[in-house]
Length: 243
Image (cartoon, rainbow, N blue to C red):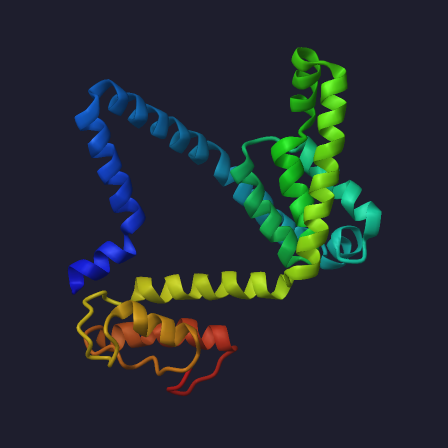
């Protein structure tokens, strides 16, 4: 049971290791190239993401919510779309760098539609990319592709704005973050003393606000204290045994 739980929790990592091993058996040269490529991407991420997280933090702390809501909110209209497109088009770095920034803006009042415009523009209509297209594929191709891409981005943004609620996105993210935090506190022995089949199920019950935080017998007072701290913080300071 414990082995099954570990495999379930780390299935992506296990599959990745298996694929690397299969590549090694198939061709040593391909395996070495794969490892070098992966290392290059990891190095790039380590160089870029710290700066991105700092920018995201500064957006959260320095820019007033009213400013974001006015210029990128649901009622910002065409102005919001143009600002979003400009932000995405002039931004530097790979596409994964856009997501922390986009999430910070989303939490400050930006609409789903404008977030989609920012991320999509970051990915496909950067100004340097348009210049390269114009040089190698011609100005006509660049303009045609650019116009069609902009129309598609605005359409997708409009559809998501009508079908996805910002509150649902933020609630899902916060719940996932809380669940991960709880799982990191629990000892992961899966002993079932708490009444659940494993620590993950107990963590889900705690994150969903319908279980007591003092049921982990193995973790004892230390785990109980840590759970009480984060769960009371989540609920705004409630001090009872029920979360």
